Length: 281
Image (cartoon, rainbow, N blue to C red; front, side, top):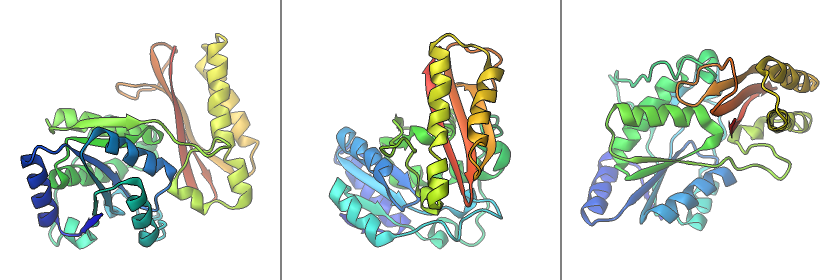
């Protein structure tokens, strides 16, 4: 595995790969890799001939009181995992390389970023869209793989790629879960044993709602109230949102029909965890 830290070098390698007719697959990450990340890399490996993974904890997607400084980092462990899973190039830029002095350009995807996580993290998706656009311009992939767990992020990136005529395919891979159902996340590291046990209620609430819908329930208010009660029964849980939205504009639904995203965000101590289910009604 080759490690590249400079933008110009990464662009040169990407140009050479494309000129040689090699299909470039890309997985952007913030590091502290887990099995969910590795599943994205394996999918990129299946779909492309050169796999590039970036590790960059992007400061512009963190709010002023969020966990940028304390976000978990373990580069040596990450590099070992990347070698095991078949990564060809690790792109490892510094903050100074990505945002040099005087930097003042940002990408803002409107509408999709003002709901769900965007409501409580107003600058988050501007930072995500900006850094992902920069990474696409640097790595020049034919395809990039994102996870369904960050469903809103995937919708935002797909919209951005379409609107800005970016020449690549966005692949969304299924959420990877722990054996007990908890969606894998680097922020699970923050959970105390009690919070970790309580966090299982997220997937339980999503499954309960899905089961109710399969049985014919169509009252969204009833479903939200039931999920809320389940989660509030856990002492360490603080609900940010529970939403039933469409998959085009992410607007809250008044009736269940078509493709529906059930999404939630809940805080357990230091960890703000998200999860979702995509269903067809």
